[in-house]
Amino acid sequence: MTSTKAGRGLISTNNMQPVGLCAYNPASDQWVPVETAAQGLVALNVDQTQDFLIHHAIATVKKTYGHNVSVNTKAKDLAKFGRTANADSGVKTTIMGLAGSEVHETYVSTNLIDSVSSSSAADADKILVVEGHTIDGSGNLTFIVQNITLTGQSEATLSTPLARCNRMYVKDGTFAAPSSEIVGNIYAYDNTGVTLSSGVPNVAASVKCMIEAGRQQSDKCATSISSTDYWFISRATFNLTKGNSSTVSGDFDIEVRRLGGVFRQAGLEVDVRSGLPTLVTHFSPLIIVPSNADVRMVVTTNTNDGAAAGRLSGFLAEVI
Image 1 (cartoon, rainbow, N blue to C red):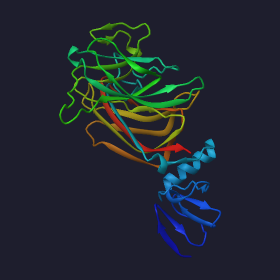
Image 2: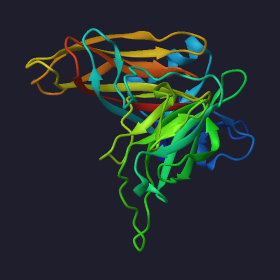
Image 3: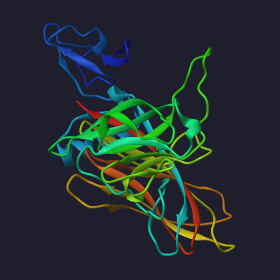
Image 4: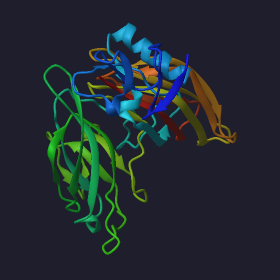
């Protein structure tokens, strides 16, 4: 067999299985790169990566969920990171910024997240980028990105209400007019029955995402996956820094909730102690988070006021 490089894929000149993203031309009985494939050719779902773990995850999705997915066509990685200083002894806590004494986000099933406010009047007219998902009547999540201009301690309204708010950060300006840092705590919340006191929602559970004062982006090691995507988690980091005792230990876990289900452990439980280097874990096989699912990193410490941080990273694969 002889092979030639053509376009983005390696194709065979004697019609054996091609490597790369190719299409079959029935007229010439040849495989050709998909970029040069004419209209009407039969597309072949082959991701260009030679990574066995990704290929295994793609095959698992097909067998388990019936979906053909591609990391190559999505061409997007995803990292979620967060921290909490509210992990109390024996209380499982999501690693994210939360209002008041909340330990987990209170999820909603309709598009109720509609408001953003700051605890500082100095944040008026500053622009944030808000990433999240809307939801339909069947539970399908759609990822959207929108901007919002803060109105200081008053309520600013999102142009598109959300069911999930995954990330917020200060929008970049231009060279001539750079953006400026935010000052206060920023809250994205469901305003149902909520009043503001100096910009702070009076119902802590209404807050779904926040940027803590001194930070310019939300810290939330939790997210949701749209109806047209899967997330292959390849790596996680875990760290404990302090508590109300000299030595703190904590059990970290990753939990996934599928559509219509409850949060279940992904089969990982890591024990970490303060004072030790950040623990890094690589997954083999990859952790597969299916479409329309929520995922979060949680920690349970042996002391009050434990400070924990974590990060999840991997590759998005889209349904094709």
